[in-house]
Image (cartoon, rainbow, N blue to C red; front, top):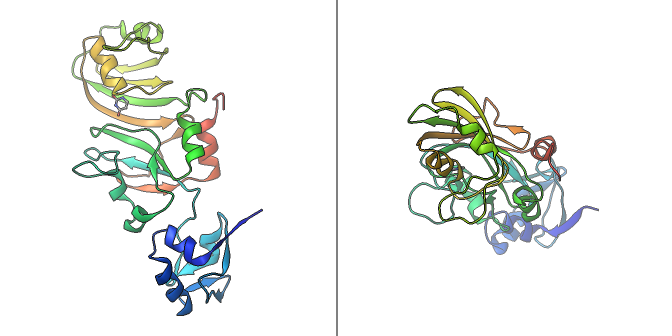
Length: 246
Ligand code: URA
């Protein structure tokens, strides 16, 4: 059944303004649902995925209600944090979304110097399902190295015995697909701090550029430029889990 929520509360939680402002906006005819003005702030409205196709606020489709997931092509130089100094990934999204409740969070993190596919959601359950070790959602990175590989790396990474400095548990097996002496794809089934950079450091190399191009079975769309984002469809979300334990 579709959840019903007071209009003033819904719009306020979507970051449009205070509840009092939302009630005033509704009274002034600024909110239209199914072609009719919603005049009262306390009127219940359906919080459904299709709400943006049914409701306008100040003449524009209402923002997606909670339960939203996005994919972003993270550019280099921005940080996956709500509050660190410098440019933040959330600043690439509409300003109003910073006031959303529940808040949007990145699904895991990419380093400031890593680009590529980053998922963002306000759905805590979905976030947990993607990062849960049980689901083992894989992540694929394109790696550019400072020095040519020596040919032993794939076996070391696949061994399940590689130990990173200051850790006490070996890494899960990871797959390396070599494209040239200094470029490869590396697929991981876990996410440890700076994992790809530390793996190559462990075999005496140095990562010069790192780009994530796949999460689970979801590829970064070729037409999504760095800094651009789009709302994930149900099919996109299903693709993330394709081939995992679920
Ligand atoms: N591994 C890294 O070293 N950095 C990332 O951003 C992701 C994986």
